[in-house]
Image (tube, chains in turn cyan, green, blue, purple):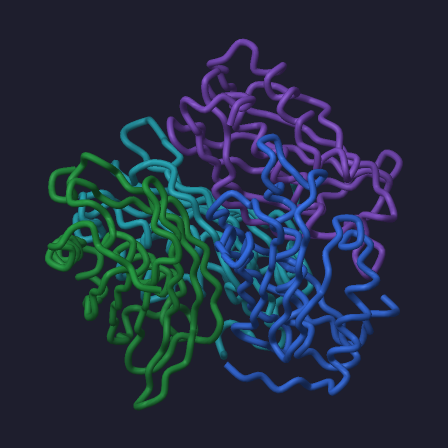
Length: 150
Length: 150
Length: 150
Length: 150
């Protein structure tokens, strides 16, 4: 599906907002692709992100899915708005192991008040990608509260 | 609801498994209460856990809810089993700000193969607690794969 | 939790709206309790509500949970508003069999724009009740669109 | 994604099971397409399926999504197994109105014990289709309990 951004500066705004998310810095996540209605976040796998069996913690997998999905929705919001996660639901499909995790968010339905997004997380080892999580998420448009000033 | 643990050593096993979750160490989460069917995890709020508006990142809120819920289910599992998150769904109810976050997980339905759990996250400022997130989660019992050896 | 309704006529309004839901008539559901933030719906089990194994269809279980939850949120909304389901997530805990199903919705967080609700469904056989489903749901307040006129 | 069915008679089995779901008969739903990992269910819109505003009840939308998703998973299960809905989460995207609703389920991850599926519901008016709901669902494989005999 092709989406039309309402803010021509959407990419700079999305990347600026992501840069202010300290939690993404803590885990080492990086924003790679930013397109209208689509955002990709990469996470190099590190030992300190693990759960008890050595795979990446499911909560961390949920974190990058939440961010990729939220920012995918944010690409389509007007310049005077900010974005808020209402809820998300994530299924774990396979152990999150490999060299990188990649979360890809895509807007299903952009709305005036609410947007609905899907985001999947893939684990990459060499050339091979395995889907490790599938998320569905609801976001709220906060009109009149620019992201920088909330 | 009162639950009967099938493993008398459930508390040591749960605390041992939590101690092996590097990701919980990274964010500074601590396991406080462990009872049959109930687990509580506390997280001191830090600046490096924030999202773009300075509140704790929703993904981090989801992380401690996921852990509290998963370990609540694990308290009721047999000694030769480990626990796996199948999926969780979390609603954000209020900005996660304050001095502490506290995630409280409680088993709704323990099962032979699947368990269903609810976990809420509260933000504490002084004496006051506000519910900031509500989660519902499905966990899987992995029979014959002790937590330490997977 | 005690809730204060903003519309003193909330009960009449909720019951009137429920009476206009043809689908509830089709399956034979009845609204029993209506209190601020809480609604109960009963469904006599019938053979034509079954799935392939003779239990009540999971979708029908979801239907009465959705209605009980939505109307629980509606009890707390202002007189000039109507209610819309944003999303719901339901876990099936046990086969839905017995003489009656009872869905009980309770508001977790009433909001100006969004409300979050939990609803559980119980199956009753004689004096015994078993929880057969657990739901968590997000509802939207539609200001300025009275329920009767939308 | 292409899926390989483990039971060559999957189509007959799926259609037979659907025919035993009385609740699908009550609402007038019909199974149209059955392919490995994909199932489509159509529902002619009728007045007795409505909610208070005359659109199709969200619970009915959830019902056909649940069935399309569950049977999509069932197409890939072995001959001696039956299928059980563990949980589903559905977002309502637009009012369910028009002449027909069409639910399309597609398997994301078939598993030995659990399968994860997405299903969307579309409303058709004339030649035009609008997505009205998006679902994500977890199903359980019940080995050794053939669908006909449970």
